[in-house]
Length: 326
Ligand code: NAD
Ligand code: LMR
Image: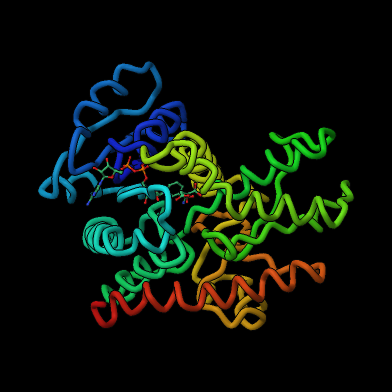
């Protein structure tokens, strides 16, 4: 039995993400939770002729039932940006939503993998971890900030500049966090390509601010949903391939709690941060190995330095929200 729960399943990300997860034969039960409309989304998806059973759970009273027995919980619940907003502006609303969902996970599925999509990811992941720590059920290998959209964008944007780079089969490592300057694509690690300094600058900027392109184009109707659903499904399936099917060697960039995670000592020491996105090998218990940061180019070192400065504040904000209630 592999039960996957989507919290925020009726939303712009939640619906296409649930549709993509319904295609997977790794999932036997897809539980869709939202404060509105999840029953309709579940009824609709349940007619698709794939193996998983689909159930809908609407409203806070049905959250425990949705989560009980979960193998994996994916969280795209909360408000998205409008033009002119930063991801950090979403903290006011989304911090409380994520805190309450994490608390319900601690009570009903303490061993589940938790995949956090809700922004600001740099702060919502620390919120989830602090809630689990308080409840004495925290395992750093099992909580992930989903930064896969930055990786997906990197492959796409690089392939547009270098057509020989096949976007579907080539991955780009993206480290740091998930907002503007904290997103650091390691283009120097793409060994088969060479870039001019102008190309590096333009590509890095486009990857860092790719989210803004979509927010601007949607013009008040939200942020990335379809590409995020594809990225979220990719990360969820990668984790299931590693944890359920036992497939080895699966690596994805993701934002994790460093202390206590296998292999993370080097990144912990070199960044001085509690949380950082980097390539992670996935395994039966989630994080199998956090890969050490590779040798960075001079530009990347400077970008990582800037990212670290910003991440410090984002992380402290999430931790303080749980520790001090503000
Ligand atoms: P949306 O408004 O379309 O959907 C959000 C859904 O969450 C709604 O259905 C809403 O009812 C639900 N919801 C609100 N409070 C809830 C609660 N307490 N419990 C369960 N569900 C609740 O928004 P969206 O476009 O799907 O974006 C969702 C979040 O994902 C936003 O915070 C957005 O910034 C973030 N996001 C993250 C990434 C990333 O790369 N990590 C990418 C895109 C968007
Ligand atoms: C993204 O990168 O598209 C998301 O984080 C949504 C946003 O607010 O830009």
